[in-house]
Each structure stands twice: as structure tokens, then as C-alpha cells.
Length: 272
Image 1: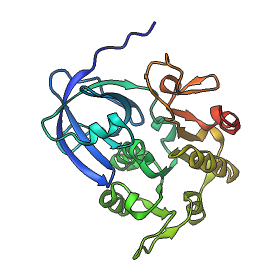
Image 2 (image 1 turned 60 degrees about the vertical axis):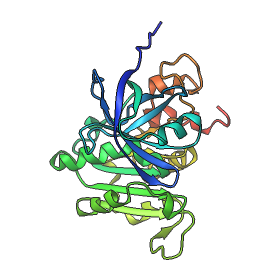
Image 3 (image 1 turned 120 degrees about the vertical axis):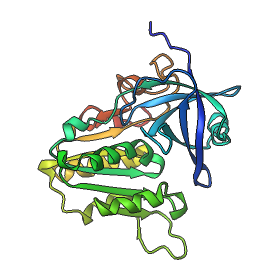
Image 4 (image 1 turned 45 degrees about the horizontal axis):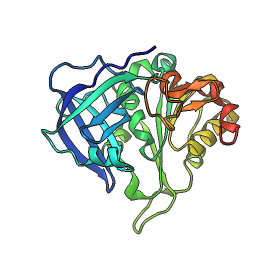
């Protein structure tokens, strides 16, 4: 039986708003540091007196050198995390799960497709590719959100335009919005896609992930070069509770990052 180590004490070094209901939190070890995380892996973050939730790492090294997690307040624990302030303590355990396979992407064009807060676990991928541009081909980042106000990391994603192709769309425009309107898959038409030499990494709401991966395969990408992150219903991080089961997979253990070739048929089964 897998044993779960007690959470390590971490303290909040910094926290800042991304949107009206989403904050980024930078954490530094108060005592012992956890082993290094890889892009795409997640931690269990414990809010004292409230509970813990799985949260993907959104930056491996933040402003103060710590781990950064981006959290949307959707429940009691995530709301408690969003109320944290510098100096507050949390418990952290991990790393858990699989990460993005950047070795498989080496030498290929890298296409990042994110919906909403799905950009958070993909952000370290962009950092990694920008840090080692000679190791990869062209980088393109496609971003979708419900409204302009729901876009996260807005200043940073604008800065990526200096070294990458960045396209943004929203479902519902606001006054003054000059960008695209529609689902994120419509942005694929703007790319000079080279299917035989492209590795795609996709994260967002499951319906968006499913349609994007299917569209990419229809455009000529082989399924194993489409990596998807399926963070749905993760709860315990150790494969015991079954909340995240997808057919034979327990996504907190076998994922959250998996090749689309492993889940394409599973994602078509209603209510699986």
C-alpha cells in the first residue's frame, strides 16, 4: 500500500490576483524542501484547518525562487488558499503524477493550447521552451477564455510574442476587445501547422481538450504526439479514492498528462 508522507511546511512568499476569482501563490519551504517538480506535475496543498486540494505547479521558480500555484476559488479549500497572505503557512506534498514529456518534443515545433486556467500547468512548458530555444522548433501558444477578464498571466503572455506565436480568443467579448471571438480550435486555422514535426500539449476544460485533440489528429498529427492533461476529479493523489478514474486509468497516478492515443476512445464514452 502506498503511504502518504505528511505535508512539508511551506510559507507564502508572495500572492497576487490573476482575475477576480483566481490568485497565484508563491511558496517557499519553511523547513525541508520537496524534491523538484517537473512541468505538468501537481502538489497537494493543505490549508490548515480546512483541507487539501491537488494543484498543478504553474511556475517552478517564481519571483522569490519558490514554487508558484495558480488557484481559482471554487470551493472551501481553494477559497481559503486564495485568502492567504505573505507569511502565512500551508502544507505541501508531492510531486505527484506525470509531467509533460518535453524530451519527446525536442527537435519538434511545440504547440501549446490552453483553455482558461488550463494555462497554469502549461506555463512551465512555455518557460522551458523559451529557456532552450535551440532544443525545439517553432513555439506557438493558443489561448482561450470565457471573457477577456478571465485571461490569466496577461502581461506575461504578451511578452511571449517576442519569441513565440501567440493567439488569443474569448467566448464573449467585452467592450473594447479587439481580439478573436470563438472557441480555441478556430485559432488553429491561423497557424502554418507542420503536422509531421509538431508536438502538441493541451489543457483546459475536458470538452475543449477532447475537441482540440481530435481536431489536431484530423489535421495530421499522430495521436501520441498530442499530450493532454486531464486533471478531472483528482482528490487523494495516490490512486485510492477512485474519484479520478477514467476507464483503466487513475489520473492522479497514471496522469494527469497522458498521450491522446491512450485516452481518445475513453473520452468518447459518455459519463465514464
